[in-house]
Image (cartoon, rainbow, N blue to C red):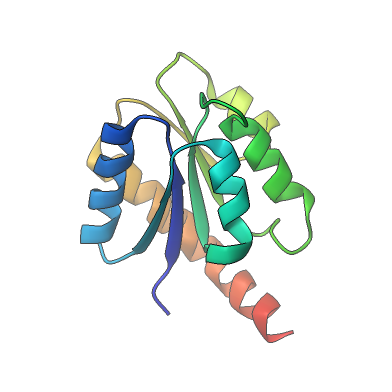
Length: 131
């Protein structure tokens, strides 16, 4: 099963860059341009992981993360929050995120976090789908 990753960022260039990196690494990528679009896509896409920018119009990444983590059917989806606004990992942790990256980040850091989070969560997601 190829992991599906939903990405949300209100900057088209950042969204395109992250999508291209993950796509070229073999993931199936879905993109959203803001938090509300990302939240609405969760049930349709059924992602194995979500990457969210913290600062977005409408629903910010922290609020989308809180929503994901508050429902039994989505709480096991790992969420990686990213920010270029000087936000800290503490903010991401308080929202329930599984990981955090400061923008700009290195390609290896993004791929490392994505790989590690998926490796931890995929067995739980497969077990939940079977039950």
